[in-house]
Image 1 (cartoon, rainbow, N blue to C red):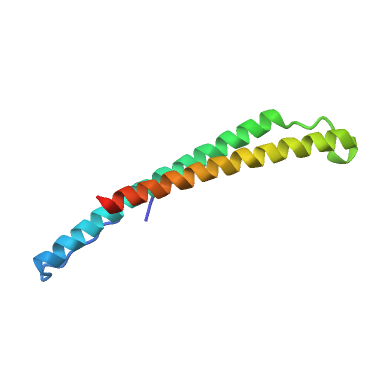
Image 2: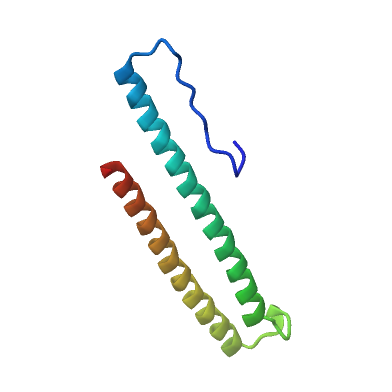
Length: 108
């Protein structure tokens, strides 16, 4: 399945109307979920680019790690821990949003 194409489910002509209706509903749900997954992938790619760009601006070592003082190493460690916390918070937000979207679509 390519990025821009939605999965297509063909329904044979000899299927009972009720079954056909159920298959159509499930097909529609599949298409909606596929769109949501693609949107989340795009968001993830954009987030990865933003992180890469931001980290490129924030972290430009003036000297190799081996040449940093103990204080400088602790400072780098602290900034990496803060970055990890921010990223984990963002991951949690994305997971919560995805869960809410799935739950809202299941109830519809």
